[in-house]
Length: 285
Image (cartoon, rainbow, N blue to C red; front, side, top):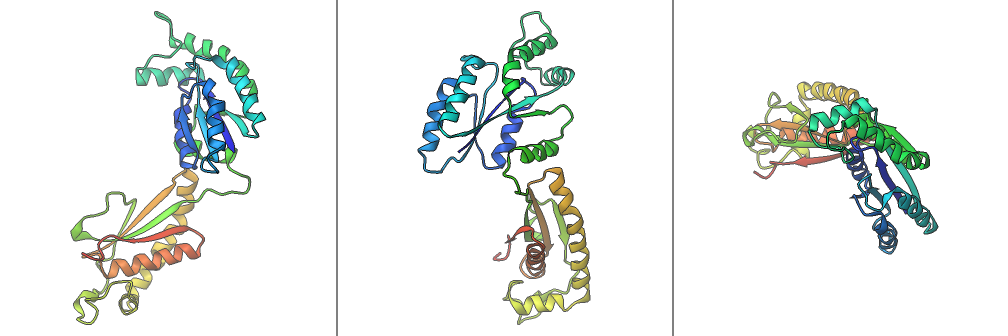
């Protein structure tokens, strides 16, 4: 079992790191008392593989203290857990600025004392844990996408690659644009099968409709340009840390043209090795 302890300076991004790890299929628990960690690990091991990747966030507010944490880590390793420490760090001016922006008190701030004094005090307190850390991540200049990439490099199995999940969704403009669409393409300029009596009852998933749509030069040229655009954008979205992308393809009713184009785009992306799924929101309306 992969057991990751997330600790570090208050304001350095422990909760954000946990959010990122949760997206990487870690089961995350915030502020679990140190004394409960071995028992929690026992329950995870006994779950029969349900909790193979676990991340626990702990900080200076843990009543048991970090001496107890170090002892607990040794216990976990004796249980054959792959136990590692991720230490979130940040520069003092950055942490001070973050606390000023959120207007939250630092957990070690004394009445009348400064945030900077509290941060230095916490750094001294956490020095033994920092020395034991397997990974140290300074979040001072990292964007969310960069943090995602950094954590993936550190904790993901060697050889694994981050993959963007793409949904190509056909819709009808008369029913509204999908709220979660990142990119929207309007294909109402294409010849409309709706006006052919033999094609009207069918959908863009039926071969006669798809053939009708792609018999037009406009459709073929449109596909070339959109495929070229997606080939350009998807690696950049992945590098930035985006985990999902929704591509909306709209026609008037969402039954014929948009469905045919969305299906073709999905197959193109799959052939390129992209994780893509096809959705047809309004096909039965």
